[in-house]
Image (tube, rainbow, N blue to C red; front, side):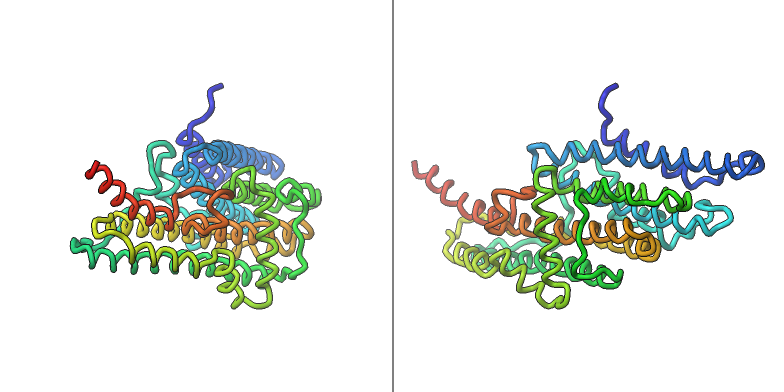
Length: 385
């Protein structure tokens, strides 16, 4: 059997999710609760399988050598993880409704997430042929005067660095706050291989809805951690767990933590000097556009991670009541959000310690600025030769 394309995997995932929300037929209900459960179980099986297949297709893309493809595949994994969490919430809530999933309200759950234009656009974009860097930005014309263009670039660099780091900080604080609100302690630990361990700790004597929801939560965790790529998951988990614990009792520490991690002052000074000393013929406006695109792309990442936090918040009651696997699952998601927020921001601004390892999904702010400024020197040398 030929490998699935992304479009095929997404279509099957959406079809199985749609089928899950259809009422169980009257004939099945009349023939008894056992048959009703079998019919629902088959639907959950199909959903979990299609969710896993979608994860496999996107995980493979994350491992490619194309930076832009890795970034887009990772963002799709995060968006699908948000949908999984919403479906899991719907499964929990459906157990208390006479007609189950068919009567779910649109204000929360999968319907709410899928109505978000950002999530919908990310999932619908083709995996091959789409480019994350082609983010549409509404902005006025850039200045043609070199001195004004130089000044505008400096402003944009400051805005991009500040905006991306601030967004990473907001996500870190939100994750820490969420973990505290869940009642998780700063001594919380991740079970080794948290994803594979969650289901093993679900007791047999739980409701069908709880077991079904647990399976879907596991798929969300798989996707969140697959977004990092296989080779770095363990290291990032260790680092992010440490960061979360460090800021647990004092969210104000986030700013200092990120400034230190990114060596932000040195990065800002390096770019300020480079812009000030650049030739008047430098590509100030091209560098300006590239920085704007990076900031806009990171805004999308933040939006999707915010949805994952929201979906996890809906699940607070069921997860914290499902000892021991529920708290482990919740903590794994909080740590994953902190890890992705911090590492992707480091990649996007091109901080020193993030340049040669970890995600490496983009050519970051530092490189796009310096390369565009250097291009003027290269062009001048070619012209004089």
